Length: 401
Image 1: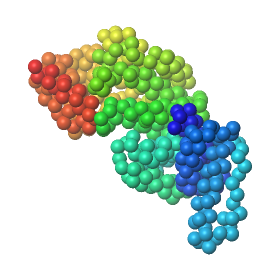
Image 2: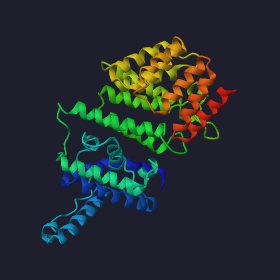
Image 3: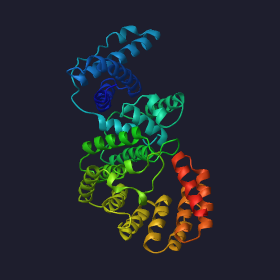
Image 4: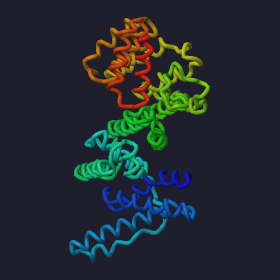
């Protein structure tokens, strides 16, 4: 499929799904119909070119698929006469864009993170079940079941197709941003598999975050999340070497960082901070910005990073934040101080390879190379991402010399 066609289909998918869901009131059946219409469009538009009114074409095609489904179901139930009165709409664009409503629906609080991510990528991102399954390294049948359960959960909840009320909106928007954040993290730092990152996920997360930010332009955390994604993703090309092996931040060739993307992320961060009190994503973006502004690793403003991690830790109570703060404290003060901070969350992070990886790094900084090598080996044994495992094995070997 030509990239231009693929991009257009991903952009239009949520608008088509919103139009059908609003018209017929059945998110589950509408979503299936839209997926079928996207498959048809991908084939025909690649062969014949994009129609004059692509959105209207998709709405009409998806509506026909939806009506065909209902007629088939109702014929089996002896209600063909009612279904026969259904007619597809004219090929006009819908009056309103329901993308934000769909984002809220797919990030429904009753869904697990895994289900919300899968449903968002399919309903809003326009990815097929097979594409999502490949991205998360699970069988297509498993992903299909996950998506089906998610739609069933939403249907059972009786969720109306509308924007949340003013009272509901902050919590629900927080769910939306969390889902997009999780998609980006899995794309940028894959938890398993042969690659450091998965461009199809990180790229899709950035695209959806842009869409969310346009729909809620004055939300500080939406701006902060998009800034965070851009500032981190800007380093992507320098994160691996020619063999696909991991290159840590301190050793990256910063001339390979995407300076235009960094500039955009910094501008978004400034806009978000001007809107009021900083939130979790804004603080994470501020930390990323300190790294991106430093011309060299040695020039990094570690005292500022330490202070920002302190604020983030007090806000979230997240032990991973404490783990990162331990590294900043070691850089500002001494490795032993970082190790002391790490000990405060050791029980909460027991069994996670990152705990051993950071402990190994701090022990190596402190000059205890034997202990560092042992913890690098422990971390490598638990790591599920192949390049990260190779990196940790290499560090263990270096520390053992």
